[in-house]
Image (tube, rainbow, N blue to C red; front, side, top):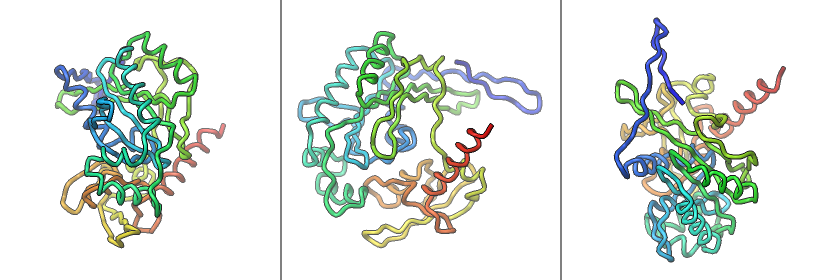
Length: 307
């Protein structure tokens, strides 16, 4: 795949070059991006447990998280994914299938004591949601070995909850970096994995997977405006937090810091935990951004279905 920037008014094409970090830095760069934007890339609300947690059997997945149903999400990032690394990830999934909420609490990056309150606030429940026995596996790589792709297709066809992200980083002449992501598989709102049974294709030839509506999409649709204040009142504490929508769809915190994710914004203003950002924040009209997003998505689907 080749990416180009179109220059106005001459309609010239400027090539983006594929960014090739030194050994080990691809994993670090992508892991950083995933940790801060996991909700957006997986298109579901995610409670982040830890990066590089040491499991009881000494395994160390790159990222461990939970969805709202208590399903463990095991994320592994490799520049090149081969069969040996796939086997390692399946071992992590085996652990996740038999773990429990007490064990997961000990792995929480902000400590076991903090876990219980954060987890209950995320799920909006009076009692901690137990860990489900259907873990979700997320594999992230720049390249997948051909025989590994065949194995992934077999696993997905036989019901393994599996999301594959083919990720490449590009860089333009101004040294601005761009993330190119192809996603195979996703989670629906009920916490079930939506499978595609066709064989996994290389990222350079496979069909694109559309991601959900973004804050920028809401701006372009006129549902939000640049400079609008979003608010969130936490049910448990009664605290109200506010952030501002920037013209590019990013979000400005009261500290002046700019973030790109609604969930990240919620975590930043509270200082700990994970929160379903789309469900937290309200526009100045009082409408939840989740409802706005659903409305715009429905409009798009209707427009697509209309001959």
